[in-house]
Length: 384
Image (tube, rainbow, N blue to C red; front, side, top):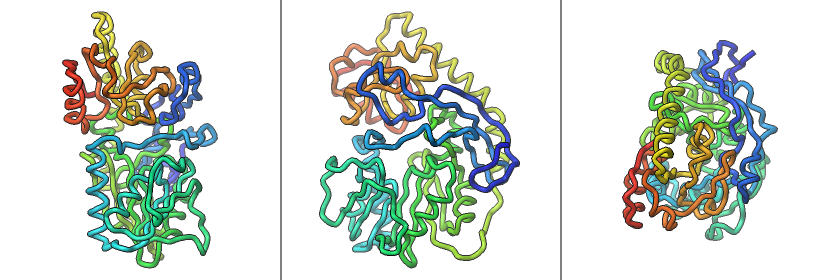
């Protein structure tokens, strides 16, 4: 029985079945051999008709381990850094957070927490089991902990509690949302950010479907999840060119105040055609890659994150594409899970011989064009 992990409804239906996904796109390997032998998992993507959540009904959290090798930082992109800085500035100004304490659950390497402090926040505490100490220099009032948030009475509390790109990794939102609420100071506000499932469906962002993400939230399903777990949403909106959803919420001791899923008809329609549309898109890119290889063109993909890993592991010719580029120096020299390519830097001389580049995220188009021009590359850039 396919039970919704957010609202408990059994009124669910299958949207997509796919198998053999690397279970961790963002834990890279030191060698091609280790990368190709990575653990894999299957996905039965289902839609809940009650709250509009998309979820992997056969997700097995025992296959995953988020340790210090888990690397997802996007802060090496100028585009993303500007987004993060503007977000921090907006939160500090709107919520009057100057000199106020902040908690971030799932802080990663701590970059965003440091930006919040630079924009005027007071004492900051970040918690993440995959945090690797020593990578980021922070002032003494920014504390980064390589643990989960301790739900204890004497634990730090925040007037702002951040949780960015964590909820989609959690098969049952109860425990995480409970931690967020526990971390709130009286009258505090939660800022939550997740990938936008409607963007994935509407724009066929099929490379965003990864095993790590066991839940995919729309505005409706995120509102439902928050209000169903003792939180009152203030607003939920799309951001980062529609790719993310951001939510502000406060603690609410009253009964859940659900709203009807306003976009449920659109989501249902998009899900009905998604499998066929996904198949056609895979065929199109398979053909593009196959044609390029037959012409003996040198092809690269730009982006070694989850999109790039899924792209390479989904296409039939994925292993034949030899060059993968990423701006994150902590990924460079490592190997792609499943297909084994070694990741190179944007300034690597190998790129000068490339004639075609598949860009994994359109938001970086101008930035990547500039980086290719810097090395005098004439490669054609295609957004995947």
